[in-house]
Image (cartoon, rainbow, N blue to C red):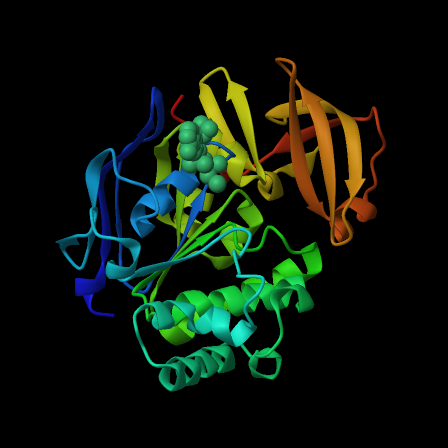
Length: 327
Ligand code: ADP
Ligand code: MG
């Protein structure tokens, strides 16, 4: 992708009265990246997305696309498009008319916008349902229609606010595969807001972890997962233990903890929970300092030498599997 379509946030700030929802965040999204904004409810994800889209005014700072300040342009003039959490389809319009709506508003004639709408429906495999009303669609089909509607303006950046949250878990995993495929085919930037770490890990080339209106950590997905910098990021990404040791606080991946005899292990403890997860067993132990850690053992490893609740064990790890955390 040409770098002239990069998206840049510069000290982007949103205030609602006295609430600072987004506090001077800066970030550079390379064109063609699938990025996830990840963080707990209320941390400022939607506000950030809406400022990029132009559905919310910028209190301070700027949004630049292709080096151009788009902060004060109306949504339709930015080169961005947004897909909303509840899809926001017009209930009284057919799928085809919903998809063609923004072109119609731009004054494009009926034959042309309907033809373009059909092309978009082809992209999301929805042509046979073109004449249906939104209420006659399943959740997954509504999502496809909303995607087609967002894409018809040929945005350079597609903004998706919790696009999978209305779907049941099974469909969510299928639709996330489709989102990824679509992004790869179109080669445009996707910025996808989610509070689900599994969703972010599955989709994102880059993860931006937000907390309390600021970016806590951002970068290539694996780099962030492999080396969380703060306890918040380690806990939010999951699969990590945050352990206070005399020499400092460590993040240790649950799958890196190895079962040992209590004597000589760095973390001696007592088993408080054993959870069977099919391919793995999650074993939780109480350790010194009133802390708990969880080790994710393969089913083979666990059942080759099964343990019981209350049993004394030791847990240890290879040096590279732990990271010191900033407080
Ligand atoms: P997220 O999408 O991460 O859940 P939001 O961006 O929706 O977070 O909200 C960030 C903060 O801003 C929250 O404290 C929320 O209550 C507040 N907020 C969001 N929208 C408004 C609004 N329209 N008016 C006042 N406060 C708002
Ligand atoms: Mg939100």
